[in-house]
Length: 477
Image (cartoon, rainbow, N blue to C red; front, side):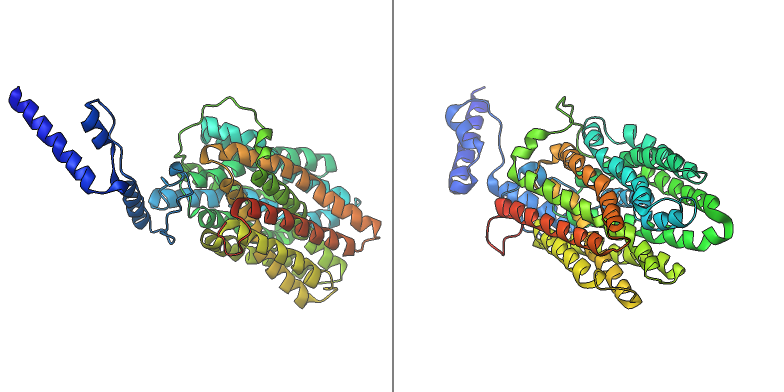
């Protein structure tokens, strides 16, 4: 026993000397344990933590290996890549293609309905079909976000997939206005939100520093759907009719959603909380409050060009086939706009890039769309440029929300933000249509409305950036 006691004392003394020799920045709990003789948990030194994080960064292939000391430690422990993480991004992309792709096809559908099934109704009335869809699409986040946090993916995702596909098959047989509202707007919007919200949030389980880039890649699915579906409709509707064309779209969506179910997987432990669905207290955080208002303004404006550009071209006497193709051109520009700037946002700051994109979107509306007239060249230029820059706004809104909250609160914060944003998409299109009707079919007031709301959104993103990142222009935030 004496030998064991002597060995323990020698070992304790040796550890103490090593800790003292290592300097004040690497003192661990071993010294305290040796001095007091008490049982205590050995903690890692700060240098050991930084070394481990640096090693993890190098293995993840992160393009920005600098560790931000201001980030809480739980935000540092993300895979940031690997086969499993990128499969999740692919599954999110597939879900986006089948849901947000339909949203990005709304301009074609509105133009078609205004000339066929609902030709006796005004643009403002028809726009309610898509504004109600969008309203439920975003409003559902307030319920889906906390449910996703507490119960995981599949209890909400699979019913959403079933409802989304069913709404497309119902749309294929709709003939009356109320049928479009019930079968597509309400069923489709309520179901799509069960797919859209978790497919966005789940990317945040696997990425933090590279979250904007990963989310941007996933969001290109919406643009791909916005290219594929309109072109398919342009090709098939004159040959096989509206009904069978929409059914083919439904089968494509079914396949993509099966892929999404097979590849999406959560990583963060479930948060079994009993908090309120709408986290109103979170608005006490000025960063989150300004971000929410900024997103509200963007959502008020962004779907106006997407929905009305085709009808604008038709009103200016442009060829019908080309007018329908403008939406596909816009979404083609949006693919790069959702991918590349997301990567840049991880380097230069998410709010910094968001501010630039919202300003450019306002300028594009004023400098290109407003004076376009019947010029096909200007319309193409506007479609490509607005598609690119507006695509950035779509993919960066969720990562801007994630930057001003903890990861475990992201679902609820995202839902709270889009609870308010949903009222923007509900009213934006009808307001634009009402402005057009008040001006006897002129699109000038509608374009100015979109431009001004973009500029207002920019102001609030600037405020959020100043509060969170300071006044320094070179600050990365």
